[in-house]
Each structure stands twice: as C-alpha cells, then as structure tokens.
Image (cartoon, rainbow, N blue to C red; front, side, top):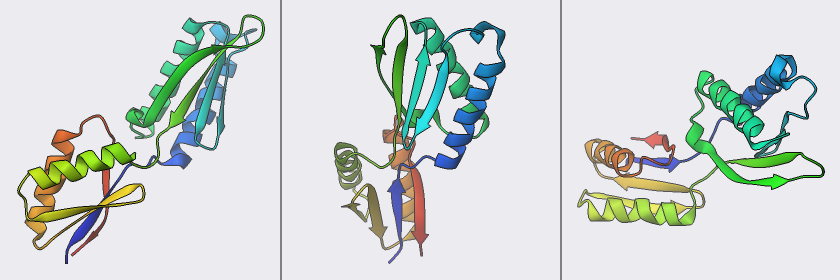
Length: 161
C-alpha cells in the first residue's frame, strides 16, 4: 500500500555551517568591533549575545541571510524572549524546530480526514504517516497539507509505492 511520511526536520549540518559563517562575519564587521556580539550553537539551540536589542536584531538578520543562502527554511527558527545578562549585555535563544508537535500532527490528521480523500493519516512519534490505495490520492493529500499548513516547513519523506 503506497504511503509517505510528513516530517519537519531542519538540515542541522547546514544550520551549523550558517552559524559558523555568521560568527565569522561578526568577527570581521567594523560595527561589531569591541562589542560583546557573539553567536553559538549547542545541539538545537542557537544563542545570540549582544550589547543591545538592536545588535541582536542585526545578528539575527545575518543568521537568516546565511540560512537562506544554504537553502534552510527560516520557519524552522523559534525565537524566545530577550533576556538581560550581567551588565549591559542581552541574549536571545533561538530554537531550531525539529519534529512535528502533537497539536500540529492532530491538525494534519484532521485536515486529511475532513478532505474526504481515500487516505488515512497516523501519528508516529514526531511524524505523520499517510497511506492510501492510489498514488494520485497521496499526491492530492501532499498538496492539501502544503496549502492548509503554510506556517510549518513540512517535507515529505519515505514515499513508498
């Protein structure tokens, strides 16, 4: 029976490369000389450190440009609130989204069920497996998911025929 998996996974190697390139640009830019501007990656958390909110925004812009050049969707990034550190420094943690949250998986399942397509959706951990009798129905389900959930950077893996 034909099936595919709906997943939400960022290419962590490309994310690491983008963070490294951003750190390199921060080190060479004149407007960041003598400041505490920095960026670091720990597993799936990117930490932006700067002297002000404006500087954090500049670092974030550089990071988003580097990610876009590496074909990583910026919708994978979840910004948290800006936190005060000691002195006049501020930091912001940006989480790299990996996996579909349970409420989003239920939303995908509900969309497919309400569409009256002859396919079934099953939540499997952090992905949603869609199975159906015909390949055309599966392709219609892919188009439906892309159209109805634009805020998640979903991809479709493991297509079996």
